[in-house]
Image 1: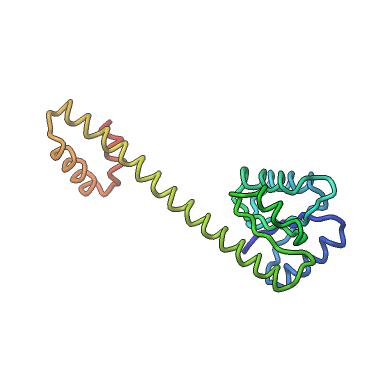
Image 2 (image 1 turned 45 degrees about the vertical axis):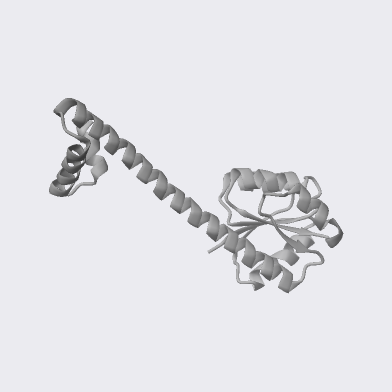
Length: 184
């Protein structure tokens, strides 16, 4: 379930946005009535989507989005007047910010939320792939160190050392990384 933060002023704007977000099927919603409060909540919790109603009374929306992108994996949605979109879009180039025009329409917000959720999903998928690759790389480091140790200390060839590690892993029903650590 997506966890959504809405940052908007005044309170009436927050309630209007929240009603539309609930209508879109999102229920895990928190509110920030100022940029400062939004910054504290972003730093304290993980969010899937952060909706920012531009302008905030006490903060620059662009710097808030930059902080959001640098310190979290949340997908930002910026609600902005049509005449300001191009200017703000240029400022936020490279941040994967989703823009929705004000006055806010149900269809426009629903599309923005769908796009933001899709971006968030892709980010999560890439993070998982990255973690898998990092784990494989770490495994390879240990295995290569173990091979070097076997080559130097036992006089094995690289192929013999590789087969030795694989055989021990199969015999002991342990991951090759654990066998390599034991050898090292």
